[in-house]
Image (tube, rainbow, N blue to C red; front, side, top):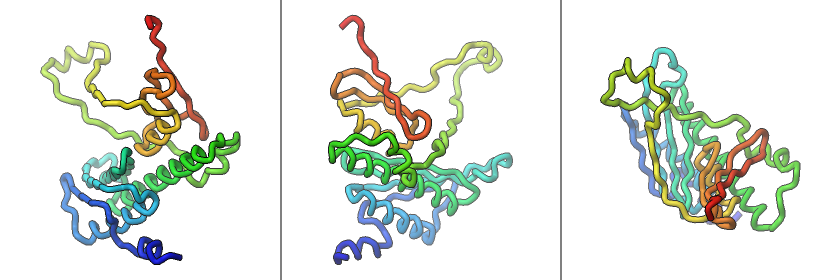
Length: 222
């Protein structure tokens, strides 16, 4: 084993910049050290990562005491962002789950890129071959509190569903394989992108088992 590799495995905190913040909670130094130790392991999976943001949030809810502590890890690298989140009954448990999810995502993306570099398509049984790298369960969905609107709540309940949130993202054309990698990194069930080959707005999404789907839009007026 080389000296550099041994030093990386012994490192107790990442070389990347780390920011740890708390919402409704103070982050003790001993827990911050534990977080950095976990991030050092994540960094070994992707040395291109340059920045980690870890957010802790306590959400008191008597009905869901087993999910009162939430941790979200955001890792930024060269041209990509990875994100993982977990809610548990303690920050220690949430940290373990969130780190595990991010590690699985990074390993899966690493395996996908290796397949792409060799020029070989994944065989039909690829899902079984990479089962150890994939979390079979779907990621938890983040619950968002409804916004406040200047309307009568009693009047509003008789109206149909409304668009309450809008987002606009800048997009550069990418391949389908890159879109799948981005989807895995952020832990979503779908990813919207501009197909580099067809120039069409497209969406990749998860199907059952380890398969994916692709939807594209075609402009009839073109």
